Image (cartoon, rainbow, N blue to C red; front, side, top):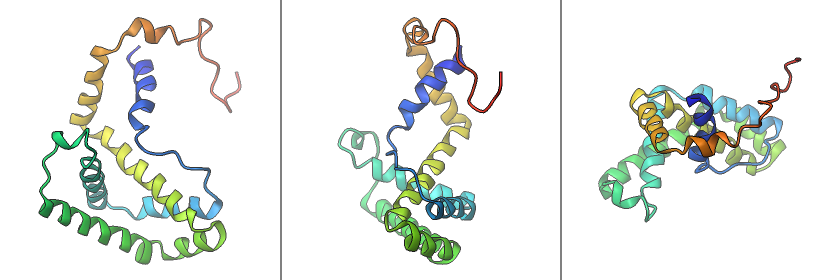
Length: 160
């Protein structure tokens, strides 16, 4: 029951990240390169940048206290990270994506990279507990009314 609710709630929580159009072959390769070249420390830099940037939203700003000096330091580190990923770690995939899939390929690849970086948050025990605390406020009866009476169809690609 909890698993079904988490499956229903997780898309709502991740909708803050825009959905990008299907990437081309080279944009996909660039996404894979970005993810593969990102160290755990790099991921922390990306997460801090994402948080600091989201905290600029007027609805979120009162919940965060980031000084201009902290924001500048976060932006510097994130800028250096993105530069290194594009110019050093993934130079060839960037060039190929630009050449064969166009300028939007880099945006698409970084969109996928950003979603990957943020999705990693749920592996942090404190974050997972925080996310699951939402369950106590869900109306389980209403959510269960979404489940078809005959159950779920088998997953695609899995013969019954």
